[in-house]
Length: 198
View 1 (cartoon, rainbow, N blue to C red):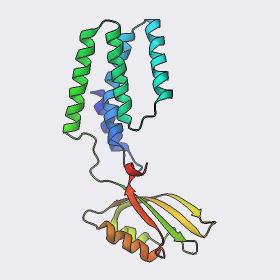
View 2 (view 1 turned 135 degrees about the vertical axis):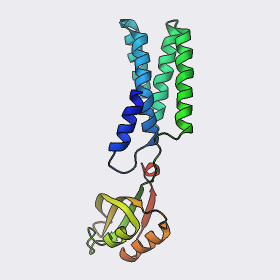
View 3 (view 1 turned 180 degrees about the vertical axis):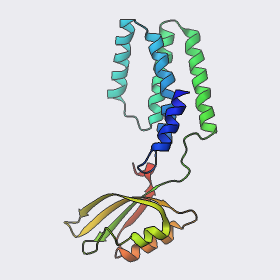
View 4 (view 1 turned 180 degrees about the horizontal axis):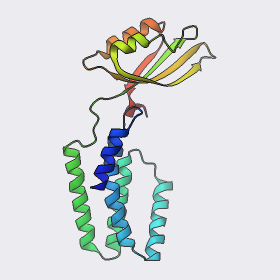
């Protein structure tokens, strides 16, 4: 229950761009998993040291692509720890309950984004004022836009601008890009979802 509360609070207060649904699901799972691990370790020093060794192997030997993977690794370790100290019924119970809980969260699409923010990259000539040249295009096509980065490229002859953009409902992405191309001298423009881009 506390994990769901934290996840909902995170969704409501998240400001910069699009949050990751996998991270939200991880927030839901972790309190229960960590509570299980702590309950199994208790005050046994040997178990605590062996668990620290397991987590150091996981941390330094594996690269996690998805935050949800970390939660499943914690769950697997907790279940393995329970089996190792002879709490077979606890291991089976927690594995089944948390797995069914994750299936339920997946079915109701908990933590999904209602609107998907796009990552927009635009090249433009150095002689244009990059702070205002696209403002009216953004006003027509986007609910919101935030400039994330501006940098020079090609020995300072062009600016590379990166925005997080949330398009208005029903707006054509192609028309949006065509309008931007008219302003940037037909230089490169790319648009992708934030999750693809990260």
